[in-house]
Length: 301
Image 1 (cartoon, rainbow, N blue to C red):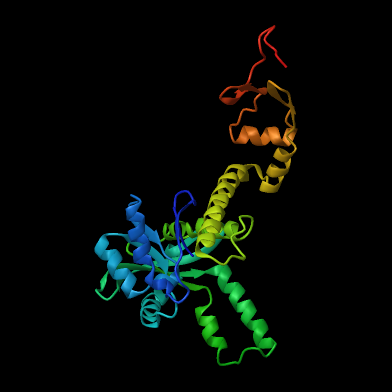
Image 2: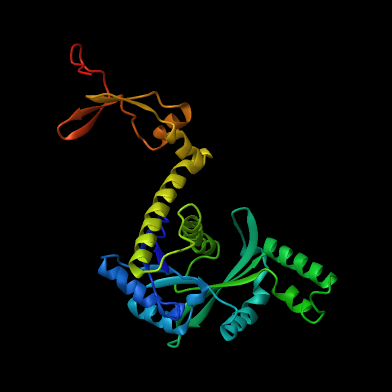
């Protein structure tokens, strides 16, 4: 399952199903092409590191689509070139940045990307907190004899180091906020697999698969909408649904009277700008919400 998330909202735009024997890296250009059919113009993408290949980068440049991604260490030639060029320039006062209460150093370097050697930009970074964690874990493994002495110097040299590459020339202190838009993407998948019941699948036909995934996508979108609205109030979705489940009513022949909302439910109504009706009036066209008392003599219960 390949899902494309809108970067500004965190909502899913589309999902695709591909056979398991298809390599993931070959799907990105076709996914972008499918977006165009739905009149969605792609001008910038945040790729997972696994999608960063020359065969994907060159079409993006040709189409005028900007991108940003973490450079995987398996791309050793480019990774080592950037590291050797920027490591001596990295840990300097002018390169110090802060993001989400974390400190680090980032230096921007020019580079060439893709088979066509297009102009690109590499952001060599050193995460101070991450480096400390990696060294701490490595020392413990070394003490437990789970790592040999020959590997340890290499771990110390690379601890906390990361490389982000992009077609955009961002400032060093701007690249992390742009890159960590991916948190909204990861949040969608966490919700999909959790409360939206994306997995595990117990179905045996393609139609059932698409139906299940469509319902999961709708449920995940609703859950994200709820979470984005209530997180400012430090509430959770379980409390929301439990309080709404306790909303009672009295059913009569001509109308349905709504009982007083409990305090928690009323708080959620306010957050979502929902006005709870006083009653629903039965008419030929169905039920119509009423927010004021009927005039004297109009009750027909």
